[in-house]
Length: 380
Image (cartoon, one colour):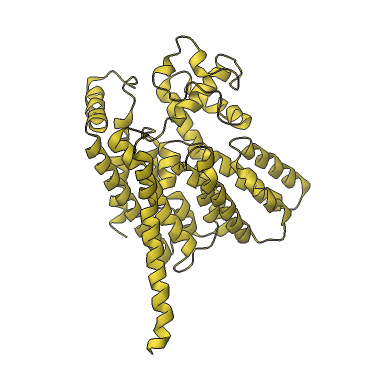
């Protein structure tokens, strides 16, 4: 346990610095010579030495998952009764990193700007239609209307106003906003389970750390509201049930995926653990169907990981180990894009292979272990 804090914080620092290499060449947060020197060196690494950048990313991911595995083992054997300070430091480092692996946060900001600064309907006007808008030089998908529901657009008013028109401040405020909902889900897990291993299973999963704290995806907001809505619905009293319905509808009106959880409202006598196991299966099903619409993005795993975290972790728990290896495979999906800077060609095929290989190795390991267990009595 004594080496885990150094490993976790060290990798968080490396990832935090590394992330700024992905900053768009048209964007800079400071004109200070030292900052520009560091930014240019990192950008050169990511954009000009992409294979080296991809190899470094793999090392970071392997290190993060190694630390995560050791933390989970320590949480189980030492029966932790608190959230160590060094974990909070590591999380804080990731929070101030650059949203390296996705441009979604800029789409959130651009949509909020169309709505609250230009006072236009974001479902009618595209950001690209705004003349002389400086964000267009580094925003992707600017030729689309709002991609998310009205509840999300309303919620973005808070971090957008806090940003006060400064791009760096706005990015930080949006990331902090999603981090609050990350904290809310973490709190709900502890409140219902009273087990730190289940808290850490969710809160320290590298996929969750990167997709929520680094990239700032709004999926965590959708899940926090959906889970809170289900929890309140389970309580006695019409005021709680009404609040639960409002929160759950707000969740659906962010992205829509949590509509799959509606059937759980009709089984009030089910224990919470059973509900969350079914919720995890339902959200995993929606996750598997995501390529029908566009692509299986890694951050969609937030949907089912948020639910599975409520399920008790038992010895050799298949669902939790499967989640571990699938999370690892999903984070490897970025490798071909970092190495080639292309979305087409063979990149999609390599992404699929990178995702499946860790999972298949784990399934093969479980299969062989089960076969040996079945053969053991006969050997006696």
